[in-house]
Each structure stands twice: as structure tokens, then as C-alpha cells.
Length: 84
Image (cartoon, rainbow, N blue to C red):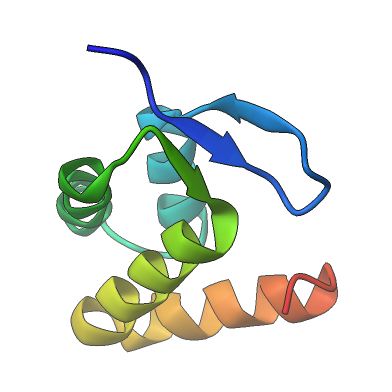
């Protein structure tokens, strides 16, 4: 199976990285189990190309449902890094 490519906002593409997504969520305060569950949801939804906003929406929805504090940290990071 061909690996999913992630289209960045700059137009650059890179391979989907499950571990990178997990690290980002645990850095926001999600537990390993929560991050793994959300990352698996993203994995199941993969297509040949996904853009970062699609992945971000899935992460935000999952964090909001499972860990509101981690969701707030995720949103704060986005605000601080102009990712909104």
C-alpha cells in the first residue's frame, strides 16, 4: 500500500508520520492512549493525500471529546504559531 502524503499549508508534501502526530498530541497533554486512539482514527481515514487542516480537525475533535485540557493546549499552540 502506498503511504499517505500530507499536504502542508505551504504546498509541500511529506509522508504521514503516525509517531509525529502522537508526539504532538502528548505534548498538548493527551495521554498515550488518547493520542493513540485519535492517531488510529486518522489512520483509518487516510487517503493518498490529506491536507493538514483535515488532520487537525480530526485531532481537535478527538481531543475535545476525550481531553478538554489537551484540546485547549492544542488550540493555544495553534494561536501562538499562527496556525489558525
